[in-house]
Length: 239
Image (cartoon, rainbow, N blue to C red; front, top):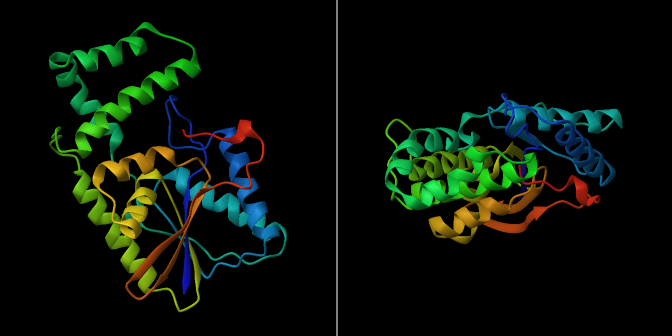
């Protein structure tokens, strides 16, 4: 059997102008992951990342920790199939129409309009975002010009199939990506419904890893959303 880790990127800069960069906390999370794996003498044969800066930078920091202790770490390939779904555009394009037609949308949006602390704003945004994305995944919401949820899942599955086909027997490989591709991989292993896949996606923590075993057509979940390297509760984040 071969082993595949899917790593969710470390914390990005949520609610800042440039979301697609790691926060200071995110950099610390990534360093701790690399340090932990290096201490565990984990050896990777193949590594790739999605195309987002937050995904690539997480992999780079993990590699730094391996090399700092003179342990090898493969050069990461960037693979477009492991990009996240375009939730930002789904929300941006769908929200005006939803606010016009849906009382629930207005109720969820109002706290963001009124302003609040950073922590409250993050929670309020997440409630609105999850409500909109749930409608989109369920097919209740069409957003022209944006990749659909089935198209996103098909893209990620193509990427996984191609990636694992290039891994030799007994290999250990890693993909640095985001919560969406991780949830699709769990769906692949457990044959989940779209809504259950979405619930899995919301659970994935920053800089956590999910572990699969694979051989031929077999693709099995071994461990989900693991973060033994993040012992301090203040390091546990979802965004």
